[in-house]
Image (cartoon, rainbow, N blue to C red; front, side, top):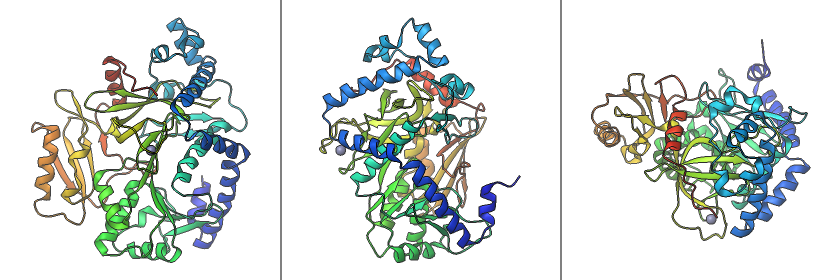
Length: 473
Ligand SMILES: [Zn+2]
C-alpha cells in the first residue's frame, strides 16, 4: 500500500515545498487555535508567580487529576487496593503512597487509563520509545493546547515569537533518497526551513551553511545529534556562519558534553534546552539565566533520589481528560540543583538532565552504571554509543572528530574502564554514524540483554530503596 509519505518522497522539490506549506496551514490551525491562545496567556501570567501561589495552584490541579483518575479502571482498582478515595490522596504525604505507574502498565492495557471513552477532537500520540516500549497516549484538546502553551512560554523567554523563522534539523527524512541539492524544504506558513539531517556530511556542509547565511535564519532548532553533526562537519571544513543567530535551541534527546563542545565551537553560541515528553508528565525549560526550571504549573514533577546524586523524573500530567497517568516513572534521570536561580521563577532548578535509565549498563555484579561522562570531548569524539550484548560484553561504536589522535582510543578505553572496571569485555568499532531509532533519535546505550524492560527493573529497585520526594516548594 502506498501511503502519503511515499507519494511525497517521489515528488519533485517544488511540489514537496508546496505540500509542506499546505501541511503547515493545517498544523497552524490545529495547534494554535483560540484555546491555545487562552492557555498561553494563563501560562505567561503564572510565569513569575511566587512559590506560595504556585503551591496552592498545584494542589487544585492535583485534586482535579485524582478525580479524573478515579474514573479510570486502572486507578479505580489502585485506589480500592489502597482503601482510599481520590479525596484522601490530595495531601503530599498521601499522594506519594500511590504506587508508581510504569511504561509497561500503560502499554499492556492503554484503555484502562482512559477517564472516558475516546471522543471527537482527541489525539492519539505515540511516544518515541525504543522497539516494544512505544505507548499510545490519548490527549484531549486541552492537553494539546497546554503542551504548546508551556513550550511557547519558554520560547518567548528567549525572544522567539510565532513569526521567527526557524532552521529545523530533525532526524526525520525531508527529501527523497535519490534527491540531492537543495537539502531542505520550506514551510512558509509555519516559518520553518526543514533541513535533511541524513545528508549532512563534510562534502555537503557548505551547501547547508550557504543556505543559512543567505536566509539569515535567526532561530536554529533540532536534535542535539543532528546539530552536533552539522557542527562537526563545519569545523572539519572550516566553514561558518557570517551572522549571529538569535538563539539555538535543542530538544528531543540528551545533549552530551562532546556534542556541546562541537556546537559551541561551530556556532559561537551556547544552546538553550528544554526537556519534555510526549506523555506530558514533566516539562523542564531553561530561563534567561541559563538554568533549567521545572514548569510546576504544567505537571506534578517528583525528583526521586536514587543515590549517586541522581534522581529519577516521575510525573503526573495535569489537564488531560482522556488518558490519566499518576506518578509515571519516566526512566529519565536528573541532578537536582542545590541552589536557587536569580531570575525569580519559582520552579525548582535542575542542574542537569543526565541521561536515561535506558542509558545505564549492567556490571557483572548486578549494579548499574551510567558511563556517558566517560566519553569526554577532550578525546576528540563526534559521537559514541555503547551496545551491551546478551552476555554482558560491550561494543563501543564511535565517530572521531577533529582532535582525534593515535592515542585517543587508548584514552577512551582508560576513561571507560573507570566506570565499568576491567572485567567486562569491550570492543571498539569505528563507524561513520551511530545507530538511530526509527524516529531518527540517538540512544547513547542500547541493551540486548533480557529482551525488554530493563528500565522497569531499575525503577523497581528504586522503589525498594524508598521514596524521597525532592524539596517541595
Ligand atoms: Zn531562572
